Image 1 (cartoon, rainbow, N blue to C red):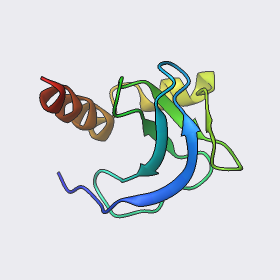
Image 2: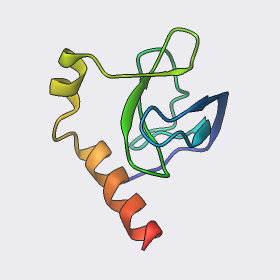
Image 3: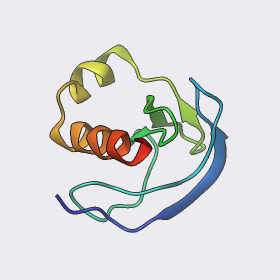
Image 4: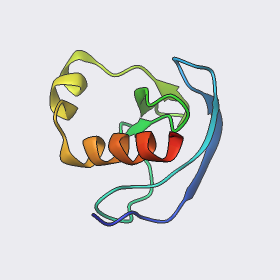
Length: 85
């Protein structure tokens, strides 16, 4: 699966572990992050979305249903786990 290049984002703490997130990359293409895009903390694996101001926010119920089982998200979580070992 293709991984895009890093794109800088405004520094924002993870909603779960507090790690500072200041970059994002896409899986499956090379899209820049935008409001509503799903992201994952590389430190703890928590899944969030970008708010209108590009800070991190919690997923809505509909977003949770939409990303459940998403192959790109599963691949990113698998890769994160392998790197953290």
